[in-house]
Image (cartoon, rainbow, N blue to C red; front, side, top):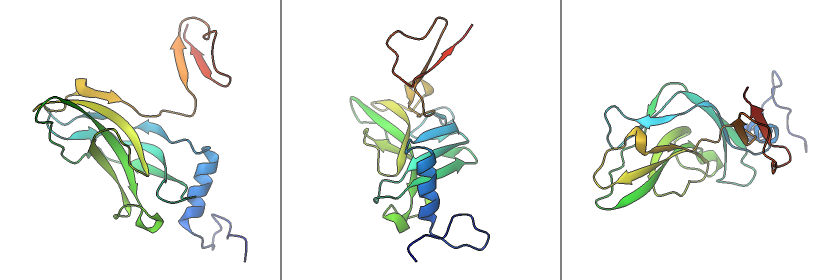
Amino acid sequence: MTIQVPIWLQAGTYPARLDRGFIEQVLHGAERVFEGCVVSQTGVGGDTVNVAVGSVAIKGDDEVNQGMYFVEVVAAETSNSLAAPGSGVRTDIVVLRVNDPAAGGAAGDNATIELISGTAVPDSAILLATIARTAGGAILDADITDSRPLGPYPYGVGTSGPPAQGVEGDLYIQVA
């Protein structure tokens, strides 16, 4: 048969890649955070961060036509530990990563919160925050910059009309 079994048939059996392809088509391939997943310091600071409850769409980059994954963080998660630099400053990132070995990805069949040294976002991951690390210092909320893609449209909020040089299709919200 040259046609896949349609998704969501009551007795149908089909590969998960078909669902992921559908999600990618609906979202036009744009990764985004639907809600939550705010990154914050752990307790009084340390070498880990917390990620709040939320949901995201992550594009699989490990293989061609891998599709997009819908991931829910159902309870606050703590990242792996990453020591501060011994000297100077360093920028680290926090990502939510899909581990799908059946699609060429990392082992695990799950999703993980990862604190990574440097700024290179790994395949099949979405950037949640960047962190300015200082020598020997703990991660504090003041060091964390929110980097979550929060929707399909860039937007601005202002008390006057839209900017004169707006881009076609931009959403502009006017607050009275």
